[in-house]
Amino acid sequence: MPHDHHDHDHLSPSGHPYRSDDDVPLTYWQQMEIALRELLIEKGVTTPEEIARQIDAMDARSPANGAALVARAWTDPAFKERLLQDASAASRDMGFDIGPLRLIAVENTAQVHNVIVCTLCSCYPRNLLGLPPDWYKSRAYRSRTVKEPRKVLSEFGLTLPDETTVRVHDSTADMRYIVLPARPKGTDGWDPDRLAELVTRDSMVGTGLPRTPA
Amino acid sequence: MPDRAMHDGAVPDGVAPVKTQRVRVAARMPMGHVRAPAYLRGKVGTIERPLGAFPDPERLAYGQPAPDRALYRVRFSMAELWGDSAEAPTDTVDAELYDTWLERLD
Amino acid sequence: MTNTPSFDGRRWHDMGGSKAGPILDETHDFALWEKRVDALMVLCSGKGHFTVDGLRRALEDMGEAAYDEMSYYERWIAAISQNLIEAGVITQSELANRMAEVAVRGDSYGEASRA
Image (tube, rainbow over all chains, first blue to last red; front, side, top):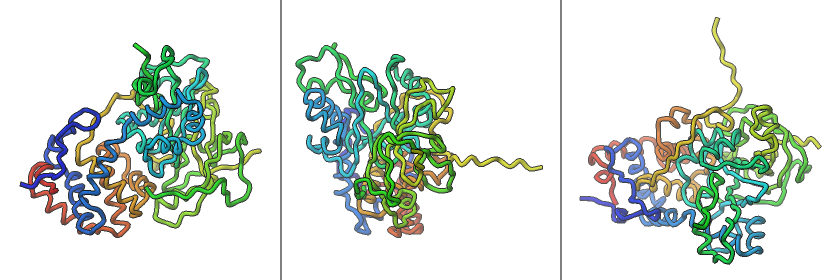
């Protein structure tokens, strides 16, 4: 009985089981994926090993990468400057292979809160943070965030004071964005690994804030 | 992803807008693939920063030879975009727009 | 007298500023077939067979019903196929014939896909 030689029946890096492909009877689009993959392999465009390696590379990308950048920026002022000047270079300095991705980091302060959206499709800094959540790709998020960001953020449980300026970044061309959230109070003397645990994915998209010390 | 060449501030027409200069987004409605969102067309913003030059996506999308075009981040106030509907008039939207879509006002 | 709708130029995918409902907290881990679609996109575009711009254009041209009725990776595999056909890497008949062959291998993804 043919089976996939690369065993994916374990937990994915997020800690959840892989969603079962066999939930539903074989769909037309699954047939297309299988057919296309086989043709591309037969034509020498790619190999099963190359595909498996790319899946693993993508699985290895997660918000933990962004959290590491943020935590270092919180503890190392020179690195923070580098991150704000050239976030692509700063990512590479920390050993993250983000490929040709052009990254811009935008800083939250007491006066400014940043939030990221792609109104035209779903552009996201995937080579750093991994794949985007479904809500980021939804009609509601893409439509409303550029017009009523405060209402959108309140639906995420985040209410901002009137004195704060909200800056929305619409990822319309070749740049990708990451929010550098403000460091939570009560974390003096914390090392970067401990700080990184406070940095949530949503805080780097701008739809949330970092966790606070318990 | 295909690597995209970047040239610092290359602007074929020679008169590059700089940070804080005011620009207006063209109000045209072309067919086909464009990356200038409709909600920005005809609106006035300021250059937040130049980003360098990249191959024109409107041509890349059709597999055509794509000359490099200068790309800018442009900042718009919510008041400019939405008028009385704006939640907070001085909140902003920053978007990346190609020079083909921008007209200098200053 | 016919009613001619005015064309304000906005295409369906150009969503900024449109009215929409609440944001649902949707997240799901991806199935293996979806990760394979993602991998094929990265690999084939990296090898120069198409650009992300060509993918986006194909997605836009699929129309609004596709966005509402198909999942994200269903639309992507369709857009990838479209781009590869345009690039001459595969033909429509090759794809159709292979899909027909795949369809009769079994009732589940696991049965129908080979290593």
